[in-house]
Length: 212
Image (tube, rainbow, N blue to C red; front, side, top):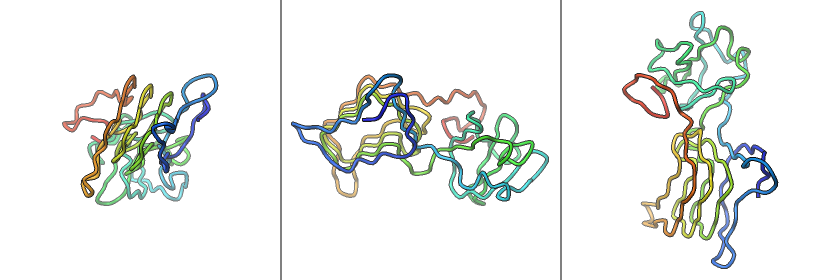
């Protein structure tokens, strides 16, 4: 059980199964808002002033191998620019996957200007259930995740209800393992709120909760 009103940073990978008579319950206790499980994390090395090089009066560059997909600067989300030349006060970052660098708008060194720099972690799932059975998840808020916020792989008799899922690239994924031909079965999902919290109007042709 997770305590209400608290935030737990990281990922939850389920390593055990329940039984028909004794399913495993992942839920909340106490008073207050739902406990938050958040797999978003800070960009590597962003707090080091030496990691940044100034490209123009307000554009800074840092080496970054993985695409952050969505990014929050000082707690506020900004849309990724279509290219380097589109980075400005609205589209505040652009990741060049070929060069493996990120460009960020900041009037001064981003390590000083921003309080935090948080992104989705590539290939990270906030909660992963793999080859398990007889589990119940309820009364939680899940955030983050690129592949999915909640991913169920080749699992059976899983109940998901009364969850709030957001600040993610994808919500819930339920599937099997093609390499073993083992599907998921008897999974119930009910009374959940899925809201990406991505509400930006922008004119790029590739519209979605990721880059421009």
